[in-house]
Image 1 (spheres, rainbow, N blue to C red):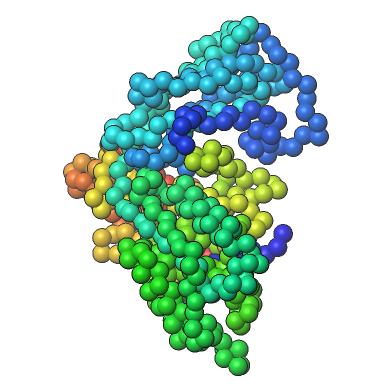
Image 2 (cartoon, helix red, strand yellow):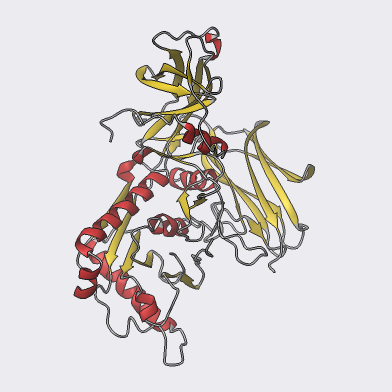
Length: 498
């Protein structure tokens, strides 16, 4: 596999990157489903037998908006995932039904053993109240289930109201008429923006009307000074880069003064032509809210990745260790609800988080760490929840005055031995007087405990797990308990750069 391009965000950093009319999602019922769930390949499918009597089991039920087992955001597209098991090499026609807070849904399906995943699209939650989902499966036609006791499950999922609003503006930069003609600009550029917008909307824990993606078709043309990145000796010019970013920031906000981020999209090979070969984008922390990337119809994660940095997310790649870690693999099934697509990492095509390095050899989505942290960022300042919840337990090497992870430190996987280690715990709609406890383990050995008494409402609770130069190298696990009940856990590594 090719080495992935890196996306880096430091003081000065080169960025290498490479509807609801139908209330149900399509089912996944084939041998390919077995490959997805079990990472198993088959030389040839075994013969399937239609049976009259079969023991169906509804083994799993979960609600999802991007990842499962996380509270639902009001106003965000939602689906219910069911896992149905039956004897191998058998097929049976059945009906999957849902009751969602009294609203019925159903779907006729053809189930194939040993397991079939069925996804049903439901109405997004609109009321701040628990969502009670009762799911069941029954055979249809001539089929009969001799053991119907395991055909039904009921789950309750809490809801969260987020209050953030993000405006992302795509600005084409320095496209000449010749380049527009060569790359079919009038057709391909709008498709690129739409795909990036769809990914951003699907992967972020915000309601549909809380994310606005806008763009213009009119290219912003740079001055010779703004696009002169290197001098005759090949030395990078920080002053010229600042001029470039200032120009893009001003031009984009003339269109959208409320833009949280302006994404300048340059023609293919633009950086190579201007002295920075192998570079696909550039980001300067000195000019926050503005990034650049080269046009690539297959690269749709730029907005999601860079907006993550605006909310303090750290990179999910690490090239300072041996072997390097180009990305974080997502090991559980995930769901792009708006596109009715299940996303699963396989041996042939890995699924990484969108905070990983850029590579055309993998696909991207969000994972529970990123999603929970962003939900907390978007909800704690003025939002609320249908019940007292711990939304996130996020590792960081520094925290803000409000206790949240400080800039560019949230969700760090690896700490240098010389860095302090914090865990920022996000509580929403908590009652006053509850006991919040953290337990730090190295392996099975408990190394530290700490407690806080909660206040009423929303708050970040920062726990200093270790001062600098106090943790030995190794893998650690932190557990968070609320009134004695385990509610979150996280894992991190302490290891020196090589």
